[in-house]
Image (cartoon, each protein chain N blue to C red):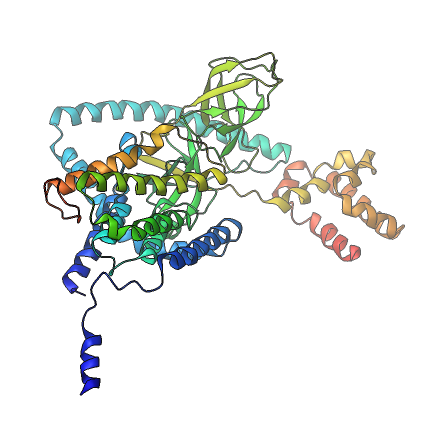
Length: 159
Length: 369
């Protein structure tokens, strides 16, 4: 495996983590996209030989640590999301950008729904539909990254 | 030859298409089970707190890195703030300090007087708390809970359970302590309850965080309860965590519906729950528990003379013993206190309360066993 790719994988994950740790508050916290999950999905699509479901689980643990919740909540959500990302990875590479965007939205929603179920079990109150805003900002970020030249493996419409 | 060829083949990086290892489904099952086990272990057992603490220490440098931009922004802002602004602020702060000084002088005399009165009444000393100033690092990242992270932790002798207050009122309680930071659950969080007292009439109740919007609820109060809109709620202090008399919230809304036996009371916290940078962590007051029971028996000698039967009520274990040991030990406690108050005025009794009750107290447990 090319070491440069592995290095950029680690670097991007650390960067995503720093973004997560930024002092978000108020409305920004409500619409904060899930940086780590986005990076994981990107690498699961681009380099499935470098990371897998286990990587997602491990990073989920760190997110659990950062959010201060019960250990394993984000880990489980990321694991399930990564499973769906990996299962359809071969098809996903053939999608065009718009299709890919919808698929990423679906993945982000899956992770949020799993998390919502877990939180509801532990007695949290629902936050209304605004709870799903981070998924929308997440795909906006994804789209922006694609526009700025990030190769997510999708094909542009013409080709 | 062929072996070497094989070897060569193996060392080649396999194309991404084929390298999969165990199937994703197997991995999913394994890691899901693992996280479920972790969740169960973390929520029901206490094994993972030390793991969490050490890992949090690992995260701390990253946290500092992430906080650096906002910190830099604030610092430069402060640096370039105008001369006029600083002068104005300085003036207003000086005035404020003057006002507080006057109030403090009053407080000192009041405290002395209070202590004297308490000594006369032989009750325990009023609680003295120590506090540590802290700065809010960031708001909790979990949308479902109301938490903040402050920059004081186990290394600064913070323990879980301490009350967190700011200049205007109670903010919350320390719920988790890391080496260099600690997690504060705000009073508006659904899981936090705080014993309060209505300032106007002294009615005691417990306020619960509402969770979603920044309000508190006063549940389980009957519809005819004497609470009005605008009533101030202060800490009652009976929980032994929050010092008594701190402002908590003001009642903003009372709904009485005929189909419910309880009133629905909504309160708005007075403390700047979400808009302050500095907070104070107030340590849990320690009340010297055994001192109280020691003082009770010799404290009111005049009472004891007339009622030998009232004494066992205050110290129950001694009652059984007294019955067991028939005549001999009964003489001791009754004669001794009788002599003492006669020759000694009350003031002397206070000065060494431990000297008198000790013989009594030490003899009792031995006899009981």
